[in-house]
Length: 151
Image 1: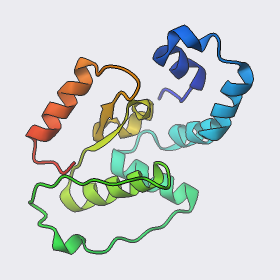
Image 2: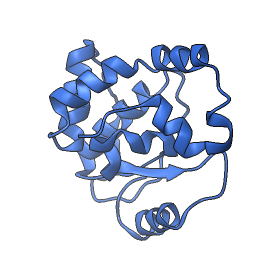
Image 3: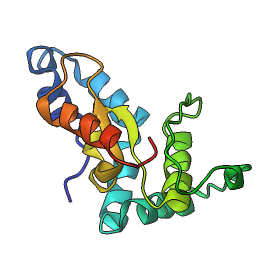
């Protein structure tokens, strides 16, 4: 399983400026995103399906949560959910966990940088926030909106 590598992601995403970014900024980014912790989790749990991977992450982090009101949604219904994420990606993972658990499958629109977390790729619909969308990303949008999956 490929690991998260801030240097490589920066070089791929912004090749013209990557070489000008000072080392202390790269080290700060690695600490900020918890690169070593994420890579440990990827080493340990990457073979799991997406929902089990999310649940293993929560267990590793000691995270618990509760959701109220799912029983009010038709499990065969088609929904488009909108949310903010004040806790970073953690609440997005909670939403994905609940949607997959309740509906059996789901898609989540995310920053395309999260495509580097490979165990969750099947759930992701990536958006490039800093450039144009590539064909694969547009195809994923079309497939998701044409499907019965909640988004």
